[in-house]
Image (tube, rainbow, N blue to C red; front, side):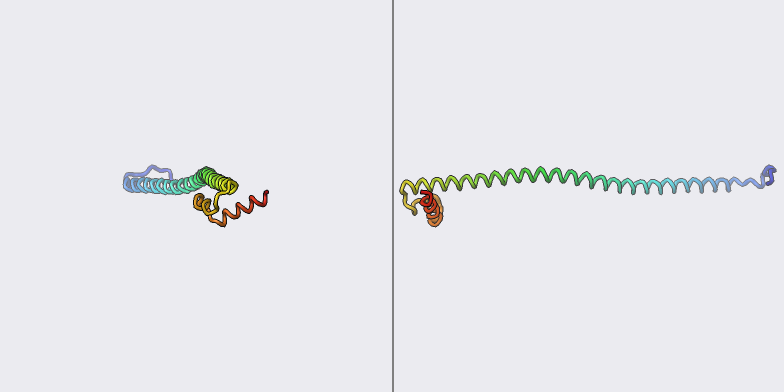
Length: 126
């Protein structure tokens, strides 16, 4: 290797400036590329985490809604069943008091066949 000092003719500031500019551009490209990759990776992770949290939240909301709907349906079925039992009890009472089947049918909006079934059950239990 030659260790002699460079002469003024050999020193070219434009070459050094070009090298510095090339390095700066390469660093900027690397920075932008890294930033883009980071954004993409962050977005992927965010989507995965969001899906997981959404599933958990959806399950919880589904359970709550299911319980509420079940309670409402249960109450409605209970009310209907209670009304039906009360109506049957009223029909039995009217039959036992000797009321006319056609009158009972009009008063309760039950068919004559339904009232006759209740009457048959009463007679079978006697």
